[in-house]
Length: 218
Image (cartoon, rainbow, N blue to C red):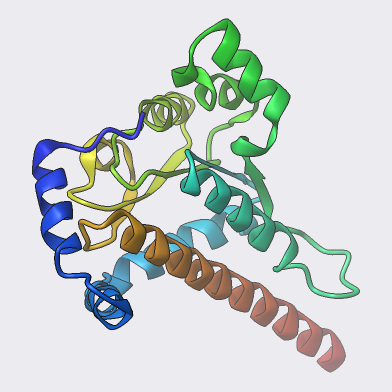
Protein backbone atom coordinates (compact mmCIF):
# COMPACT_ATOMS: atom_id res chain seq x y z
CA UNK A 1 0.00 0.00 0.00
CA UNK A 2 2.90 2.35 0.68
CA UNK A 3 5.01 1.20 -2.27
CA UNK A 4 8.57 2.48 -2.47
CA UNK A 5 10.54 2.35 -5.72
CA UNK A 6 13.76 0.37 -6.13
CA UNK A 7 15.64 3.67 -6.37
CA UNK A 8 14.08 4.88 -3.12
CA UNK A 9 14.89 1.59 -1.39
CA UNK A 10 18.53 1.86 -2.45
CA UNK A 11 18.70 5.43 -1.19
CA UNK A 12 17.02 4.39 2.06
CA UNK A 13 19.57 1.64 2.63
CA UNK A 14 22.40 4.03 1.83
CA UNK A 15 21.20 6.56 4.38
CA UNK A 16 20.40 3.87 6.93
CA UNK A 17 24.01 2.65 6.68
CA UNK A 18 25.07 6.02 8.06
CA UNK A 19 23.16 5.40 11.29
CA UNK A 20 25.25 3.43 13.78
CA UNK A 21 24.30 5.08 17.06
CA UNK A 22 22.13 7.85 18.52
CA UNK A 23 24.58 10.58 17.51
CA UNK A 24 24.57 9.52 13.87
CA UNK A 25 20.75 9.22 13.82
CA UNK A 26 20.30 12.77 14.99
CA UNK A 27 23.05 13.95 12.68
CA UNK A 28 21.10 12.54 9.71
CA UNK A 29 17.91 14.08 11.11
CA UNK A 30 19.61 17.45 11.51
CA UNK A 31 20.84 17.48 7.89
CA UNK A 32 17.34 16.76 6.59
CA UNK A 33 15.85 19.35 8.94
CA UNK A 34 18.22 22.05 7.73
CA UNK A 35 17.26 21.26 4.11
CA UNK A 36 13.49 21.58 4.61
CA UNK A 37 11.94 24.08 2.17
CA UNK A 38 10.66 26.73 4.57
CA UNK A 39 8.83 28.66 1.85
CA UNK A 40 6.71 25.60 1.05
CA UNK A 41 5.67 25.26 4.67
CA UNK A 42 4.74 28.95 4.77
CA UNK A 43 2.61 28.56 1.63
CA UNK A 44 0.78 25.55 3.03
CA UNK A 45 0.14 27.45 6.27
CA UNK A 46 -1.49 30.19 4.19
CA UNK A 47 -3.67 27.60 2.43
CA UNK A 48 -4.84 26.20 5.77
CA UNK A 49 -5.43 29.67 7.19
CA UNK A 50 -7.45 30.51 4.08
CA UNK A 51 -9.67 27.48 4.74
CA UNK A 52 -10.34 28.83 8.23
CA UNK A 53 -11.12 32.33 6.93
CA UNK A 54 -13.49 30.98 4.28
CA UNK A 55 -15.25 28.42 6.47
CA UNK A 56 -13.90 25.47 4.49
CA UNK A 57 -13.07 22.00 5.83
CA UNK A 58 -9.62 20.41 5.98
CA UNK A 59 -9.67 16.63 5.44
CA UNK A 60 -6.57 14.68 6.54
CA UNK A 61 -5.62 11.09 5.72
CA UNK A 62 -2.72 8.63 5.58
CA UNK A 63 -1.70 5.08 6.51
CA UNK A 64 0.17 3.67 9.50
CA UNK A 65 2.23 6.37 11.18
CA UNK A 66 0.75 8.85 8.72
CA UNK A 67 -2.73 7.85 9.94
CA UNK A 68 -1.79 8.74 13.50
CA UNK A 69 -0.31 12.01 12.27
CA UNK A 70 -3.56 12.82 10.45
CA UNK A 71 -5.44 12.36 13.74
CA UNK A 72 -2.84 14.35 15.68
CA UNK A 73 -2.86 17.22 13.19
CA UNK A 74 -6.66 17.34 13.07
CA UNK A 75 -6.71 17.60 16.88
CA UNK A 76 -4.13 20.41 16.86
CA UNK A 77 -5.97 22.37 14.18
CA UNK A 78 -9.48 21.94 15.55
CA UNK A 79 -8.77 22.33 19.28
CA UNK A 80 -5.42 24.08 19.57
CA UNK A 81 -6.57 27.08 17.55
CA UNK A 82 -9.62 27.79 19.71
CA UNK A 83 -9.41 31.13 21.53
CA UNK A 84 -10.48 30.65 25.17
CA UNK A 85 -13.84 32.25 25.83
CA UNK A 86 -14.42 33.07 22.18
CA UNK A 87 -17.59 32.06 20.38
CA UNK A 88 -16.18 32.96 16.98
CA UNK A 89 -15.23 30.93 13.93
CA UNK A 90 -13.23 27.72 14.38
CA UNK A 91 -10.98 25.61 12.16
CA UNK A 92 -12.92 22.76 10.56
CA UNK A 93 -10.53 19.78 10.48
CA UNK A 94 -11.49 16.11 10.06
CA UNK A 95 -9.18 13.09 10.01
CA UNK A 96 -10.70 10.48 7.68
CA UNK A 97 -8.64 7.89 9.58
CA UNK A 98 -10.78 8.28 12.70
CA UNK A 99 -14.07 6.71 11.56
CA UNK A 100 -13.14 3.05 12.05
CA UNK A 101 -16.60 1.59 11.14
CA UNK A 102 -16.63 3.50 7.84
CA UNK A 103 -13.00 2.69 7.09
CA UNK A 104 -13.39 -1.03 7.72
CA UNK A 105 -16.72 -1.20 5.87
CA UNK A 106 -15.20 0.23 2.70
CA UNK A 107 -12.11 -1.97 3.07
CA UNK A 108 -14.24 -5.08 3.54
CA UNK A 109 -17.06 -4.43 1.09
CA UNK A 110 -15.13 -2.65 -1.65
CA UNK A 111 -11.34 -2.53 -1.32
CA UNK A 112 -8.69 -0.91 0.82
CA UNK A 113 -7.95 1.63 -1.90
CA UNK A 114 -11.39 3.17 -1.26
CA UNK A 115 -11.14 3.79 2.50
CA UNK A 116 -10.50 7.54 2.13
CA UNK A 117 -11.89 8.39 -1.29
CA UNK A 118 -15.42 7.05 -0.73
CA UNK A 119 -16.03 8.74 2.66
CA UNK A 120 -14.53 11.90 1.16
CA UNK A 121 -17.15 11.84 -1.63
CA UNK A 122 -19.86 12.22 1.04
CA UNK A 123 -18.30 15.33 2.53
CA UNK A 124 -15.92 17.28 0.29
CA UNK A 125 -17.02 20.52 -1.33
CA UNK A 126 -15.40 23.02 -3.64
CA UNK A 127 -12.79 25.09 -1.81
CA UNK A 128 -12.17 22.49 0.91
CA UNK A 129 -8.66 21.16 1.56
CA UNK A 130 -7.64 17.52 1.05
CA UNK A 131 -4.40 16.94 2.96
CA UNK A 132 -2.72 13.63 2.10
CA UNK A 133 0.22 12.19 4.03
CA UNK A 134 2.38 9.45 2.51
CA UNK A 135 6.10 8.98 3.05
CA UNK A 136 6.51 7.23 -0.30
CA UNK A 137 3.95 9.38 -2.09
CA UNK A 138 2.55 6.22 -3.68
CA UNK A 139 -0.12 4.99 -1.26
CA UNK A 140 -2.99 4.09 -3.56
CA UNK A 141 -5.76 5.03 -1.16
CA UNK A 142 -4.18 8.45 -0.61
CA UNK A 143 -3.79 8.99 -4.36
CA UNK A 144 -7.41 8.00 -4.98
CA UNK A 145 -8.68 10.41 -2.33
CA UNK A 146 -6.64 13.25 -3.83
CA UNK A 147 -8.16 12.51 -7.24
CA UNK A 148 -11.67 12.67 -5.76
CA UNK A 149 -10.79 15.98 -4.11
CA UNK A 150 -9.63 17.36 -7.45
CA UNK A 151 -12.87 16.24 -9.10
CA UNK A 152 -14.86 18.20 -6.51
CA UNK A 153 -12.86 21.41 -6.78
CA UNK A 154 -10.97 21.03 -3.51
CA UNK A 155 -7.40 22.24 -2.99
CA UNK A 156 -4.96 19.36 -2.58
CA UNK A 157 -1.95 19.42 -0.26
CA UNK A 158 0.54 16.64 0.46
CA UNK A 159 3.36 15.63 2.79
CA UNK A 160 5.84 13.16 1.31
CA UNK A 161 9.44 12.03 1.26
CA UNK A 162 11.89 10.17 -0.98
CA UNK A 163 11.30 11.62 -4.48
CA UNK A 164 7.66 12.54 -3.85
CA UNK A 165 6.13 9.60 -5.73
CA UNK A 166 2.93 9.97 -7.73
CA UNK A 167 1.33 12.15 -5.07
CA UNK A 168 3.24 15.30 -6.05
CA UNK A 169 1.47 15.33 -9.43
CA UNK A 170 -1.93 15.48 -7.70
CA UNK A 171 -1.17 18.24 -5.21
CA UNK A 172 -1.56 21.97 -5.56
CA UNK A 173 1.20 22.29 -2.98
CA UNK A 174 3.47 19.55 -1.72
CA UNK A 175 6.19 19.28 0.91
CA UNK A 176 8.85 16.65 0.25
CA UNK A 177 11.03 15.94 3.27
CA UNK A 178 14.58 15.71 1.90
CA UNK A 179 15.37 12.21 3.18
CA UNK A 180 15.37 8.57 2.09
CA UNK A 181 14.84 7.22 5.60
CA UNK A 182 11.26 6.43 6.61
CA UNK A 183 11.74 7.30 10.28
CA UNK A 184 13.47 10.60 9.48
CA UNK A 185 10.65 11.47 7.08
CA UNK A 186 8.03 10.70 9.74
CA UNK A 187 9.97 12.72 12.33
CA UNK A 188 9.99 15.75 10.08
CA UNK A 189 6.38 15.32 9.01
CA UNK A 190 5.48 15.79 12.67
CA UNK A 191 7.77 18.82 12.90
CA UNK A 192 6.20 20.28 9.76
CA UNK A 193 2.64 19.82 11.00
CA UNK A 194 3.50 21.35 14.37
CA UNK A 195 4.99 24.31 12.51
CA UNK A 196 1.88 24.58 10.32
CA UNK A 197 -0.39 24.44 13.34
CA UNK A 198 1.63 27.13 15.13
CA UNK A 199 1.59 29.46 12.12
CA UNK A 200 -2.17 29.04 11.62
CA UNK A 201 -2.91 29.46 15.33
CA UNK A 202 -0.79 32.59 15.60
CA UNK A 203 -2.56 34.21 12.64
CA UNK A 204 -5.96 33.37 14.14
CA UNK A 205 -4.95 34.77 17.53
CA UNK A 206 -3.54 37.90 15.87
CA UNK A 207 -6.84 38.41 14.02
CA UNK A 208 -8.70 38.12 17.31
CA UNK A 209 -6.38 40.59 19.04
CA UNK A 210 -6.79 43.17 16.25
CA UNK A 211 -10.56 42.79 16.36
CA UNK A 212 -10.57 43.22 20.15
CA UNK A 213 -8.41 46.37 19.92
CA UNK A 214 -10.62 47.82 17.16
CA UNK A 215 -13.74 47.16 19.28
CA UNK A 216 -12.23 48.95 22.28
CA UNK A 217 -11.17 51.93 20.17
CA UNK A 218 -14.59 52.30 18.59
